[in-house]
Image (cartoon, rainbow, N blue to C red; front, side, top):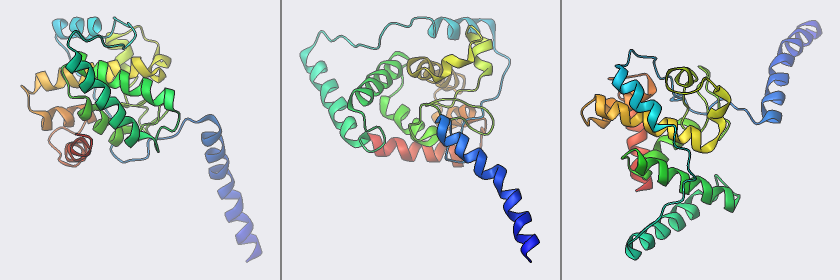
Length: 211
């Protein structure tokens, strides 16, 4: 009996060690079963060029408003979302930078910022260094192969906040266009599960909570 307990302890050691390393480094597997597994697809040259162009402009995500009413609406949105995200992102400056970047990159790609917040909730639970079991990275769980397809092959950049959000928003926009505006199917493509309801339904539910 004692020998059996010792054997179980020995087998448990690698698991405990792995969790210790994971928490120490801050690189955690995404906590949900929906973590992104985008499929590498054959893209038309025009689509590839458009995506490559979309991720090149790395200007700081600082929106400028001509209309004071638009500025007021934006400020109200940031304040509201900041209060709701406080538990997930406790550092105020980081939280504001995150929301500014989400808003900027979502609008730049023609997406609703609240949709992107819902997708991030499902994909990574707002964890910058989340890594899924299939290797998807960052807030929007972007697969590393995209850096070869439309970027400069530097996979480390997917842990940069603006880069990750820019890739994720540009890719989702591409899928929305490919599916002729059908968000349900586009979300399925984003997750690598086109036609299956679990992931799109989870994102749409989260989106509704952030509206």
